[in-house]
Length: 279
Length: 279
Image (cartoon, rainbow over all chains, first blue to last red; front, side, top):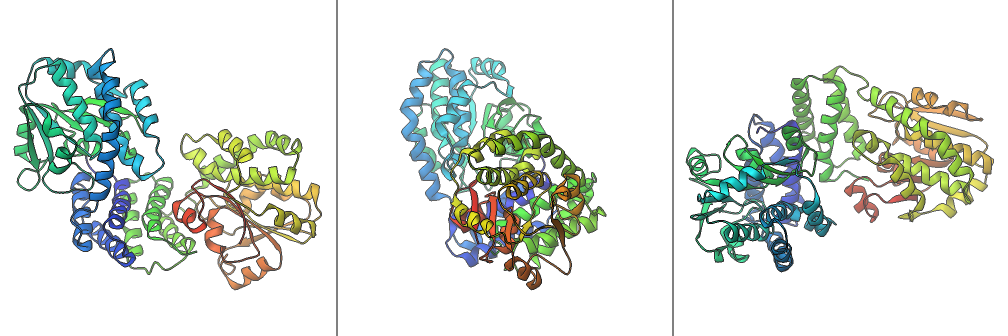
């Protein structure tokens, strides 16, 4: 999907947030804000949000000299989620439909970034994700694909929620027999996205028959080569950002919570809706 | 108070909202967005939010050719509030402390703009404003000043909530004997701020011993002449915007609900806090 005009000011909000994480220097915050505005103004906006976002966060890193502004907060997300792991595992094991429950939890995990940055009620979000109707529900198609035993390509999203992804993958392994799992992470830090370090920190590497794929220079999410890998596997994509980047790939199962009006309008669902959508 | 960096992207969000109200032409929305960004970039930001906001909304009007983008929505606010008037009047009349109740309602009225633009629960906001503790409470000082019978200068805020202002002024007249009431409105349309037309539409002109003052070019809210009038009266100022413009005038009683993080930080209160603050 393409960026909307609403994205332009939202990128600036994100850049300021990142600038504040990267540095305490107020003068730098204004310098970054102005540089981002200048770059955005000089740019054609007929692009994917993720493409513009990459440029914006590149400016933050360059000017602040901090290559990983979200490092501290990512660890915080991971630690919060790790503390919840055993409780969540119990919920899945005791449920009538473990896959459905684990999918719902994986989507609920998508709100951890809200949870840390404000007084968000994470437990409430989990209860709600367990009880609520999906805004879009392609669960039957996902289960059918899982039955086939094809290799799974799992495109991770944020730190923290990968603990919930781990639980989903373990649940899939206990119910089905995929030939292999490829777990896609970012090759270098991008906002609060999962890197190899994060994945190992929460124990994704303990999952049997799993290998990592790092995307970044040479293997971008939107590149032809990456899309070829996506199309040749049963691909599960987490988070709104990956939907924005890959929405037109019809074979992908997108799992996310709708976090902004632009995506809500694109999908014709409400804000906060939980989505399991085949592309 | 001065604008924060957070205000810069927020002005752009407001400009886009106003552009969409002013015109359905998507090309114009982008033109306005870019023009606003260019103007902001070229500007020193060491200004009051209201000053920058005036420039931003001036661009929207100029480029769209629509001198009053909020005309339709202001009528909608006024009509919603007018329908509530009799019920609110009853709440005030039945209350132990009518002034306190009318002040609380006047602050609750400050959320009508949220109520119209989203699925905001206005009735819930009113119940909450009636029950909650003030984040800042200078009620004793306000009552003491009202006892003096001085002339009241009442600086109005948005359409819709003026119905609640009318109720507060009527309640003041039933409990105290101010020599006169001067009701301050905008001389020309500024976002959803109250103009003379709005004030008459909801019956403010029926309040005995009341005269209108129109502020605009020549008598800006922040001008020396206006501040002189403010200081020579018992001044009640509604809404966050007027606080941003006049926060350092110590004699003013500010009544508002805290709607953004910049003001929340400035006052060291939480978002959504209800404030009755002597400047």
